[in-house]
Image: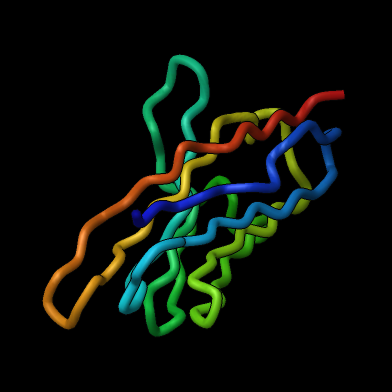
Length: 120
């Protein structure tokens, strides 16, 4: 059974750092683009950062210069390093990935989410 499992969330003070991880498990041929989204209470889910299979990245304006997305294809894992965290970064963070099972079959998967709370 293929799934994405996030880890690394928690409570951190403003200005602090956290590193989120998302590992794809199961029988996977390869991963294509992978990304992190977040959803704060009462708000829509929004893209935080995305990384393509070739390594190119894009970020939401609100996190540019503070967050860094990276991937380890050998481990089918994507990371989100979050620095200089602000209270407005508080949200449930979700991992999303385009996972390929063969040269022609793929699906988009979501993780269950991990809570990030930035508060003093």
